[in-house]
Length: 235
Image 1 (tube, one colour):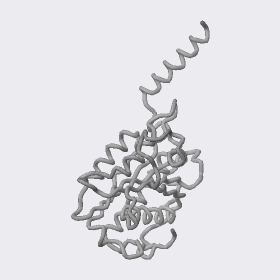
Image 2 (spheres, rainbow, N blue to C red):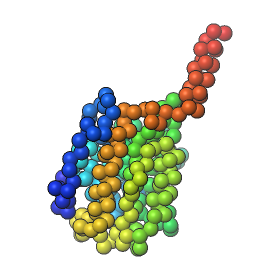
Image 3 (cartoon, rainbow, N blue to C red):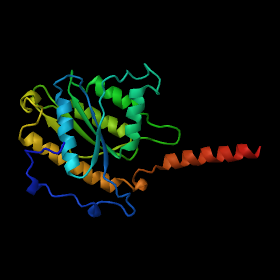
Image 4 (cartoon, rainbow, N blue to C red):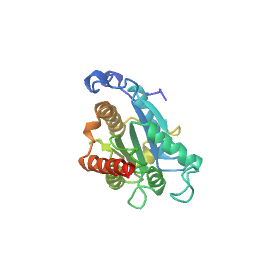
C-alpha cells in the first residue's frame, strides 16, 4: 500500500501528533476502518478506498479495509454470522472510518448501506461509533454528483460520528483509474489527499477527548438506570 507515484511528498508534510492530540493521548497510530460499496471485480469505489488506505498509511495511520463479500442483508442472519462479527469487531477497533460508495440511482449503494446497518447504534451502554471520525467519498459514472455524499453525511450524523468537513466526489470514475486500478494524477486525486490528511488530523484531535461528544441526555439516562438498579437492590 506504500506506492504513491502521484504524491508530491514535499507538499504533504508529516503530521505531528503533538499539534493535535489530547493530553494523555494513547500514542498509537490512528486506527481507520474503510468501507466501500461495490462488489464488482473492477470496483472504482474499492480502487478509491485503496488509494485512501495508501495515503492514510503514509500519514501514519493503521488501516483496515473491510471486504463486504458474503455479508448478509441486515437481519437475514444472526449477529454472530462470521462476516457480521468481523465488521463489528473492526468498527469497535477503529477510531475513524472512511466510507466510499458509487452513486446508483441517485443514491449510495445498498452494499454500503448494509454494512452501516449491521453496525449497531448502541450495544448496552456502549455506542460503537459515537465520537469516531468519518470521511466520505463517492465515485460517479458520469458528471460529478453529491447525492451519495449527502446521504452518507446524514447517516454519519445519525451514527453520532464526527464527520469531517471535506469530502471527495470523483466524476467519470471509469476515466480516472488505470488498468491496474491506480488513480491517475488529477484534481480528484489531490482532493482525496486533502480528505485523508484532514481525517488523520481530526482523529488525533477528537480521540481521547470524550467530553467533545458526551451528551447531557445520556448522562441523565445513565443516572436514571443506575438509580433504578441501586434502588432495586435495596428492596
